[in-house]
Length: 166
Image 1 (cartoon, rainbow, N blue to C red):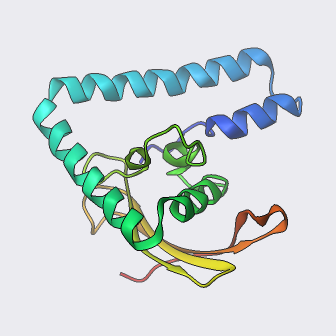
Image 2 (image 1 turned 180 degrees about the vertical axis):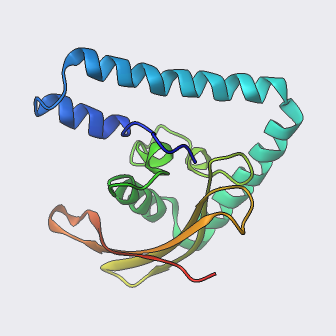
Image 3 (image 1 turned 135 degrees about the vertical axis):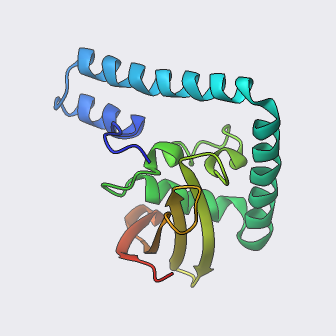
């Protein structure tokens, strides 16, 4: 996972609207995100077989999560995780609440930075989610457990975050 990753776009726009950053800073940072996406597309074009295998894996994982928990709940959890400070996968999850973005786009199984939803337990007004992210090597990947509760406006917010035991 990249260390100096700029904030996800939704946070950049909030900073801009609050007057914390200038329009030029907003545009420069969004250009960084754009260059990252273009580099990823180029990488996928250079190795179409690996890209195809990754696509199959993430579609299978997305279908599994959709069957077990429902796409709506998973999107809500991902959107709440995207708001967590210092959470590197936020850059992958920032638009999880946009229904026009395909659900499988939020998963990364082999291509780094990976993002996997290992377990999710729904307890009505709270959800516990264990995620793994970072390195494709599972021994080097970071595992965290998040507890989310519904807050005002019926949106999930992370109330507890801890490292998971391997």
